[in-house]
Length: 353
Image (cartoon, rainbow, N blue to C red; front, side):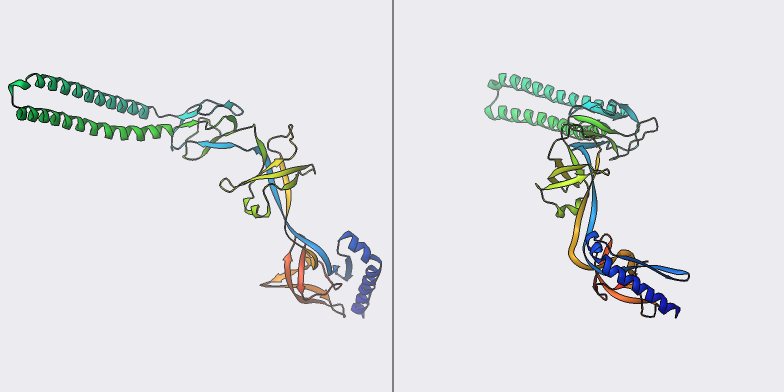
């Protein structure tokens, strides 16, 4: 008797809410919630309704410089010889910003350069000496036959050609060593690749040791800024040239236009439709992207749906007031609701929690 009386009470409350509150529920776009209980157990009830449901994703974008470059050394295990800029400094393209200790390598490079220059001078000297000997030979041309003269000329030129080739081989090898060492030393330096401002600086204290490819500083061009979003995997939901409204956590809204989808950099660039000259760099804004929606879907709150393996089910009270399980088939799992494809009918009451 206790359970039947309890269930009758639940039905009475349900009827009152169904007749008196159905219009309000539709207007508020909320499921009606009933409370029931027997002894130690109490449950919140909800009705299966047809509703508009949405699955969304909140994307984050930050207001920052459009053009920037991350700079690093390409050499491992070296200490800093000098950092010539500070955070916030303006720099120009080609300016030396920092370098590592490589004094021994610089000395070796200078020696190779001297060696190459010396060898080149030897070639010049041999060319002058050959020209002199050919001139002297030509003066004695009348005392020998044409064949003998030509043979001596050929022998002289061959002798000098072999000497020059040996020196040129030495220069070639030294030049390869020079170029390789020069590139290594350049890897110990950081140059600005663009005009801009130093917007990031790694701690370069006494304990700093270089690590190839590890970012040391960032240079950015403050003349051009936009909202940059790195959720590039959702780029297919956007169209270049279209307007999108971003908002801060406090509700301030900004109308933007999608200007670029840069897959190489992994960012989408949204520019303000109306320039905001007092906008702070680093301003964080949000965009609620609708991934999927259905206008009139039979649905229940997410908390009412339970899962076991590949199946889904809900709890309900049978006519005797006993809690039972009902298997259902679900469709779209939206933000707060789950679409019901089969197993329930509109208006049925199930246990919310």
